Image (cartoon, rainbow, N blue to C red; front, side, top):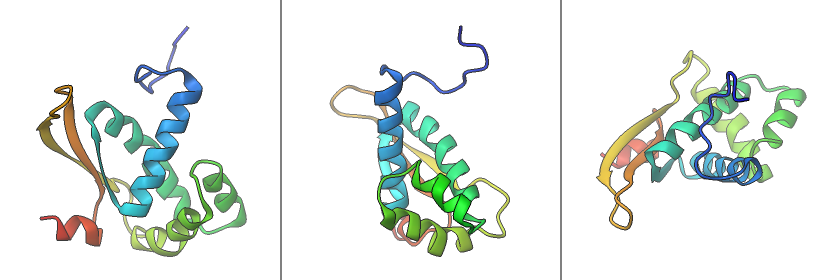
Length: 125
């Protein structure tokens, strides 16, 4: 039964969905902006917000938890050295979704998922 399971299935089984979301979150933290579908962005946003909240508290335990959720040690370093201090005073809402319209190939709603207050987001406007 799916009681209280809020993450959408996104047309994948659990392992493939977990890998896809980890890849999207890793790309979001490296590039600070990613173009994807609306459904994927909403699922990725939830995971990214939780990871950034852990990144604000720089302890060994937090680093190990984050390392289990993203790919690559460079992402963990960036999260704790740059992103954690950047959002230290912010109580939440670290990401924004900007709608682009239908995607050319399959007409899915394309969006930009980006980090708020990032240099990449400011230069794109």
